[in-house]
Image (cartoon, rainbow, N blue to C red; front, side, top):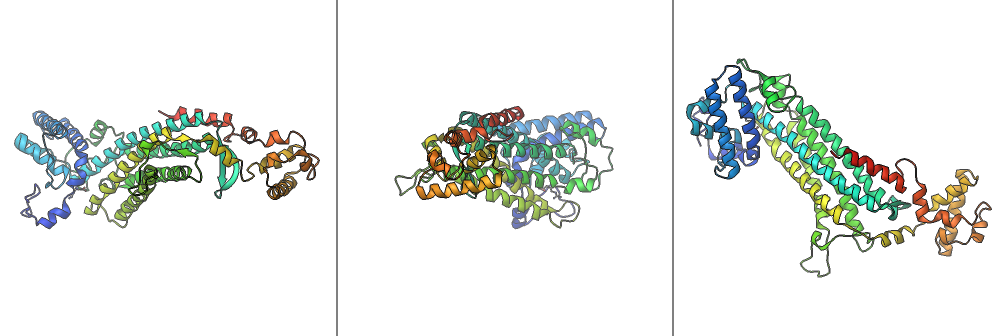
Length: 458
Ligand code: ARG
């Protein structure tokens, strides 16, 4: 295949070289950013007198036509092209003639690809941020509907203390809130440093205006060192770490939903449209969506390792190794978007089985801390109260009853401080309502969390 870069060599490469060298199958997704970058480059060169105004206009309208035609399907991206940058330049030259050949003045594919991918990261952060907002909205709405729904709160997967289902859901909202701030944080660093104008690695002999070109593309500043600019992929690592953390969060929620939907738990049920069947077991209703989100987490973690490993030990400046950066990035971005979209729906449609949650919370002496707290309020030091409460739990275990069902006379054997009000105090609803400390599980405390989350949704 003949190349635009024919010169030193004849530009005719072996098929195997074409196959390994080509990135068009992956970077074709960047065509809009590539064209936007080229339009800004042409404008900057015209402003600086590097090319004429008429030439810039021809280049810009040619580029706009290419974008329209790719988008409408009129122009197919050539799968045998080396990469998207070469493809666009070649079509431009085919369409407008020799003027098209001026576009690549004071530029290199090295700063071009750094620019295109940075623009991709910035735009995708915005769309992921928007999706997280939708997820936060459904989590907050679902929580508000379940403020009074009691379930067992676990530590070590053992019944620990009663919580509301709302509190459990809002814990995930807080995770996604942090995810949002991680995205915003790394986007800020991306926007501040446009790589374009670094050229191949050392800058250029032409009188370019990098700040102007950067500002046309929405950047607030430029990368300060040309060698760093073309080889820097820190933002890939930052974004892919943030995405891996998002997947870690969705994976934790997946695990809970899968567990809650089992016959053992029976806490939630997914509508039929959100489950799948088995090819052999007629009774099956499987939570595949949650399982897949849990499973895809491994790939997104792998993508992070992939980019870190590609960059490890890479000398300055551009090396072809970096071409391998895009596949894992695109995969992580697309996977995260799909999983968040899935969760927006799953959280919304998930049916909550309040009765089963409550029945489960009644088991396991989940209000034993409340019994100790009761004794403390009546004047007993906490460590003693803890001990008495433990003995009562042990007594109830032998007797086969719950703490809230033990008659007051029997309580009296353990402490005179225990009175008629004990049953009311140990009612699971009281236990939840009384945990009114900031961040606690009481309805009013959870409502504050819901209000906070609603304020951060853009
Ligand atoms: N396709 C290349 C990449 O993705 C573009 C840059 C190529 N630069 C070069 N000097 N061959 O990294």
